[in-house]
Image 1 (tube, rainbow, N blue to C red):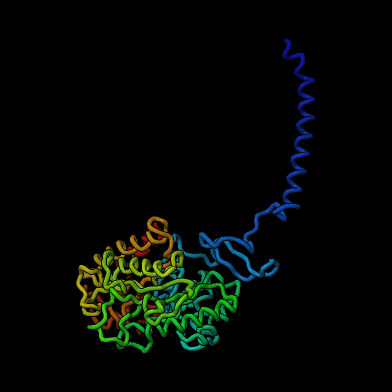
Image 2: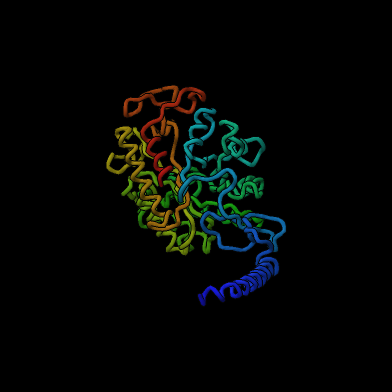
Length: 412
């Protein structure tokens, strides 16, 4: 009875008090939102200050104090699931059925090579458009790893053209493509390449271009030196490029590194190329030169079905070739499992992207993920092998290697 007697009065007092408390809290909250750090009670997707992590990128924006902003997440075209992302060489140019297949399966990154200085309506412009230019118009456009010429002036013509907010997170630049690979190669030593890269790097940053310019580490440190007097493992390419005592560029600044690590999951051919473990060796060498947190990209890796077209006297044990489709698929799964661990946090976060070489067989070997529809010969597994003259609108014949890579992309 006593409790019932005082309850009505107490309840009214409590109600009045509650209303007053709510009004005070609301007033304080409004002040903090509008007068303190946040201009509105809504979250902003950009900020002109911040640490670039988890896919965030910096781009030019209006209305910010520094003229730049950080965009969190991917562009409207999307990016691959997982880190690092997975792309394809030989992505475009095969017509709507094949391009739609890649896009619908989740692939978003295409690797393309630029020639000379920028000219409009080129394949890069096309790939950045709907459906990668030769897909279904309702499909997204590609993101692009663009191989620019290792001539700083020509490279800058491409980078300047795509220096817009629309392309800020959709393009990565690679400075040349194995222009200095062998002793009898294309006439550019590690030192000369590093000097050209330094010029392009400085010009790019002076122009305020945010996309990274990749320094290619796949090269021959014995360039211009008789092979029998130079030991690759003792004089790594990065050392020749960056060690002043070896003629390299001192205090070289690098946005990111790229490499071609053809070879088996546990292979390391002279710490230079050929083998996933060579990737780790190269990274460790870069760290020893001060590049502790510099990102890396594997822009070519693949397994051929023809041992005579794999380099360095390949055997099946070193992973440079596979004797069957099933072996090719299992090699891909094993190698990608290890490589991805260097980007997803299991064994590091420095590897940002992997690009398979390549979708179709070609004159360099039977690396393809699908059987080219116009046969020119038979591959080592007894199936028709095609080349780049194959028709663009003919039926698709996916190999187990494609299915394995697709499954890996989906699940990792």
